[in-house]
Image 1 (cartoon, rainbow, N blue to C red):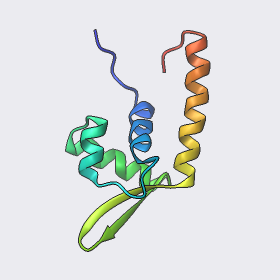
Image 2 (image 1 turned 90 degrees about the vertical axis):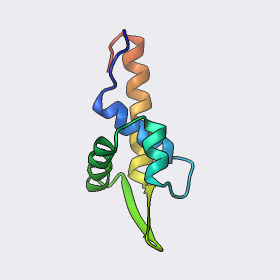
Image 3 (image 1 turned 180 degrees about the vertical axis):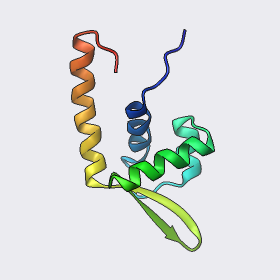
Image 4 (image 1 turned 60 degrees about the vertical axis):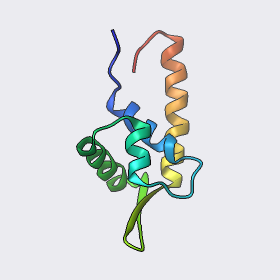
Length: 91
């Protein structure tokens, strides 16, 4: 049986897709994070509202870029994940 991803797991997956790119199109995030359009919009809005990403509109196209705060979230989540895995706790 496949386990469902937690909300924080989904948010970190989205941030990881943006991690090494200057800017990312929503379609790339949609496919990379394996989300429906509706769920993607909600997660992007939440990440933007909390300051983990910024929305960029250029020539009528929308892109997203990870912020320093978003990069720090990835690092901290990695530490938490390693700790939880060491004790067999599923997050």
